[in-house]
Image 1 (cartoon, one colour):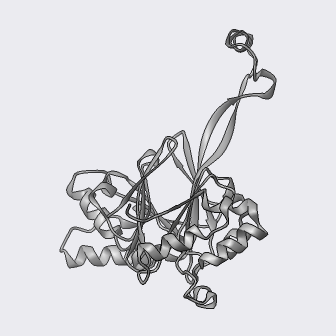
Image 2: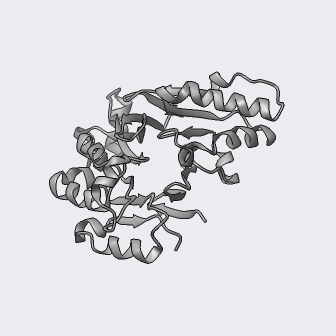
Length: 281
């Protein structure tokens, strides 16, 4: 079952088991992050940001297109690594042929992204893509809230004074981009070392596929993160894990809930108190 999460005013619904399915639904952004399975709730959200094209992260995309069409909603908008866009369109066209459906302009609804590309989600939010180290082409996504804040000279002044300054034609406020949410799909710890700025996000989704009984070299070989890798990053690059809310997901199917909670409980105290494990409670 998916897990309902709430961090401040941000409400999410998420599910993640390595090899089975991963998805995070964020209604505030009208977006899904990965879609290894397509629950009905996901079809209410138009934008789908795929970290990479492995089936447990992208297998729900054809259903997303199909269900939205069935409900009479506007076509899905899917964003993915540029290297995967053409093949993803081929898969979607194949499903059209299998189901004997009229062809649609799939290319118009699938957009390949490169690191540094941005997508505007209305006036309030912008999504920025960044490079991720995994076995195949992968991206992570940071949602930036475009906040309007008072300029330093006007902070602390009474509202009447600020209003009077505005009437005089003075520019009293300015845009302030704030990272509210970062999603990283499958990745190695090298991603965090390359991008310590990810720790500035209010909420940070990371993987922790393997625990102590799996050798760390195995995690690295398959492009995954071992829980002990995160301990190293916390010690060596603490700013990369400075987020007040860190959600750990994508645990291997071979672990049960007790294994995972016991391993997470042994994390360094400062990291442990900010970690939420994506498990059904």
